[in-house]
Image (cartoon, rainbow over all chains, first blue to last red):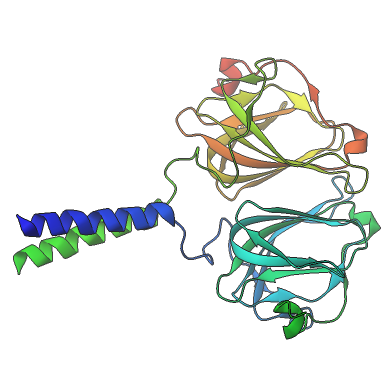
Length: 156
Length: 156
C-alpha cells in the first residue's frame, strides 16, 4: 500500500514537472534549427532559419534565430527597423545608450529604423526569437562591432 | 523487484507521452488569448491578441489569432498583403480560385497585396497563428463575405 502511495506521489511530481515546463529544451523550437551565423557577426552560436525571403511585394524579411546560452549578435542597425517576438527561453535586447531589457517567451521588441541594438540569449538559458525586418527597400542590416563581455553582463 | 520494473516502465510511458505531445491543448498558446473577433467577420470563435500596433515608423501590424476548431475568417484582402506563421495546431488557408492549403505548426503563408483569401482552424483541432500585415499605409484589411460551409469543407 505504501509503495502505491509512493508511486502515485512520484507520478504526480513527473506530470506537474512536464505541465509547468513542457518545453524544457529551448533548442527544440517551432522551426528547424537552420544555419549557424558567421563569427564575424555573432559571439557564440546563433542559428538562423529563413521563413520569408526579401521580395518587392511584401518588402518584409522574416526568420527565426535560436541563440545558444551566452550567444548574442554584434551591435547592428536595420534601415527599416526590426520587430522581435520571443517564442521560448530567455534573453536580452539593448538599444545603444539605453538599459538592457530582459526578454522571455511572449515578449515583443520594436526597434526603430537606423537605431543601434543587439539581442541574444541569457548566460544559462537559450532563446528562440522570430525576427521581422519591414521595409527592406530601406536596407536590411548594417553590422557593427561585437558586444563586449562587460556590455553583455550589463556592468555599469 | 517486479514492482520496480513496473514503476520504471510506467514512468517511461508518461515521459514519452509528454515528450511527443508537450502542448496537446492548442488553446494554450505563447500569448494571451485576447478578444473575440466580431461575428460580422468570423464564423465560429476566433480570438485576436495585438502585438505591434499600426505606426508610421515600422508600418507593420502584428498579432496572434487563436481559431477554435471549425472557426474561420470571412473572405478578405490586405492592401499590403499578409504573412501568416502557424505556431500550433492545424488549419487551412485559401486564395480565391486556388486549392485550399492545409496548415500545421511551423508553416508559413505569404498572401500578396489585394488578393482575396481566408484562413481558419480545422474542424477538430484549433490553430494558433501569428499574422504580419506589412506596409499598412496601403490599407490594413477589407472584409468581404463569409466562407460557406461548402467552401470550408472544400466540396468541389
